[in-house]
Figure 1 (spheres, rainbow, N blue to C red):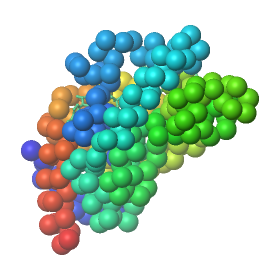
Figure 2: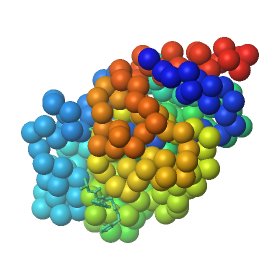
Figure 3: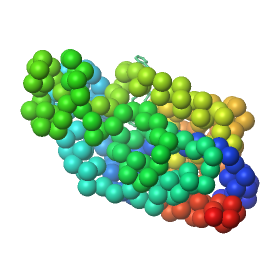
Figure 4: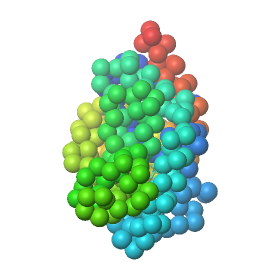
Length: 243
Ligand code: BJW
C-alpha cells in the first residue's frame, strides 16, 4: 500500500505539510464537488460559487450554503482527520493546508491549519464586511447597512485570504514530506502547492481513490479512501518513531 520509502521518510521527518481537499471529508458524509454524485454533478460551479452567481440570485446561493452548513454541523471528523491530528503531535512542524470549508480539521484536533478557501461556519456582510451570524444569513441582509450576507468562503475569481497561500507555499517547499490528500488538484492556486513542493525536491505522496490531475508529478500515489489509508500510515510511522 505504501512504499518503504514513504514510511522511512515520515519516520525521520521533522516537518510535514499536507494539502487536503473534499475527498478528505467524503467519509464524514460531506459530498465532494467533482465526483459523480458530487455537489457539481448537476450544477455548474460558476452558477453557485462566484460573485456573479451570488448577485444574480442571492437567495439561491444563500439557501445552498445554509443547506451545506446544516450538513457540516452534523458531520464528525473521520479516522483520516484524526490520523493527521495524531501525526501532528509526533512532529516538530506540521501544517494542514486545507481547501475545505467544513471545520473538520479543527474538530479533529489539528492545530496548525491554513484555510485556503475560508470557512462555511462564518458569514459576513458583502457590503460593510462586518461578521454576521446565522440568523442574519437566514434573513439575507445586513441589519446595519442592508448589504447582502454571504458565507466566508472563497469563490472563483476571488483572492485567497491574505497571506494564506504564501504561508502554505512556505510550508510546502520547506517540508521533508508533502501529502496531497483527497483533491482533484484542478483548482489553482491550491493545486500549485504540491507542484511547488515536488519542484523543490520534497518527497510527495498523493492519497486519493483515483489519480488526480497532478498524480504523475508525485513520487507515489496511495490509492484508497483516506479514512482507511491515513490511519494505517500513521500507525506505522508511530511504531517507527516509538510512539
Ligand atoms: C477521495 C475520497 C476518499 C473522493 N478518500 N480521496 C491557473 C490556471 C487556471 C485557472 C486558474 C489559475 N489560477 C487561478 C485560476 C482561476 C480559478 C481556477 O482554479 N479555475 C480552474 C478550476 C480552471 N481559481 C480561482 O478563481 C481562485 N482565485 C484566484 O485564483 O484568485 C486570484 C485571481 C483573482 C481574480 C482574478 C483572477 C485571479 C479561487 C478558487 C476558489 C475555489 N473555491 C471553491 C468553492 C469554495 C466554497 C464552497 O465550498 O462552496 O473551493 S471551488 C471548489 O473546488 C472548492 C474546493 O476547495 C475546490 C477544490 O476541489 P477539491 O477539494 O479538489 O474537490 P473535488 O471534488 O474536485 O475532488 C475531490 C477528490 O477527492 C477527487 O480527486 C476524488 O477522487 C477524491 N476522493 N473520495 C480520498 N474517500
